[in-house]
Image (tube, rainbow, N blue to C red; front, side):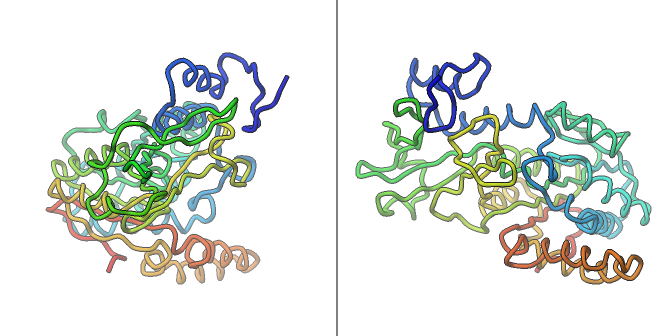
Length: 360
């Protein structure tokens, strides 16, 4: 069989997502990047545990227990300063292997906070792994089935970046949505035919040809619902991801496979597709629902304000033979050249809850 420039063989099995997309494009025309990314990641996460050395990527909770512990301490602190409300629920979005929750819950328990645990997770493969880490968890496919009355403590680590994005490109004929088309058998980007100038912020409409802007209606919808919950029920949220504090030009779409970046159009459904999160827009959406935006900070600075250096020293003193590994893990989380600057954390709370520590 022939091999296309995407690395896919022609004549694939009928359940191969690349083959499905090709048939769809040939029959009905180009598809949106939103559809391509959404369906690709749904297929990807449904079929595997992508984390760890044997997977495709490693996230902060897998690097060090200190990450989850400090999140747990932050949640306990804001709970205590807000009057220790009863019947609190811990809600994690995209909880991976459950490692973050396990570490955070252990830290919270030391201060008397023992919330019911809920995971928003659609992958049956990951649910099996999560139950081993947190046996009493309750799962949800989305936020709609969470408890409707009690305070909620939301945590999301590298959840938003995997939600589908939309890209718009400036062309000589104005702004157009970027779509996925075919050239021979290869997936390519193409400009759609419908004018999209009205969807572009006014200050960007006169940008140079070739400029690309990204938005994510999916991220906006999650933030709107999450903030509504905090407004109505009380609670707080910490959302970690790699991204920008304000809107930047350029495509940030990337794919990771076997711990390496690969062509995002090469293997739909077999690689993790992500894009940088634009925290400024999400903060404005949250505030539109009468929620306190505590702040957005670089992950490294936030962890240092929460005491990761002291925690590293304490663990190294207790286990001197692991001291070098502990310091290396700390550096990976906080140093600007590693995860410390590119990754951000945004804090939110209900108006009747206190502000949280670690933000300017």
